[in-house]
Length: 163
Image (cartoon, rainbow, N blue to C red; front, side, top):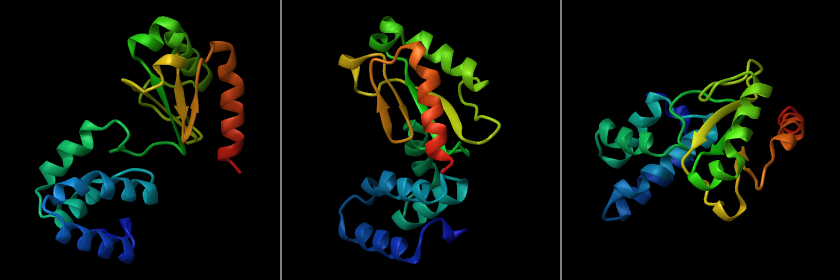
């Protein structure tokens, strides 16, 4: 197992937390997020580390990891673009924003740009229905996005990512 996916301090902290709670399963997302924050994504070894820390099977961890679309089980770009494809966003122009992103980035959903900066992923809801259409780029949220704004957003985000 590649325990470099977490620091020794993180491993010890998660071990102690797992021992102190009735349902260690509650820590699955916390551990997977820590692995992802450190490595950019969660490789199979991350699932194994998590299962070992919590006394669960790798399958039990994998079920949780693959349920959440913000846990990445394969390498992604420096910035992941999540485009909301809910009915609210779609009915207010989200589909056009999504097509503009694909066109400007030269990728299809689930793909990463050749320079490794952006990965484009759909998401079922970003919780910004009142400000649709919405998308996130890395940690930043964009509301009421129009297709005409996409190029400038990508330009700014690319500059920030390459600093």
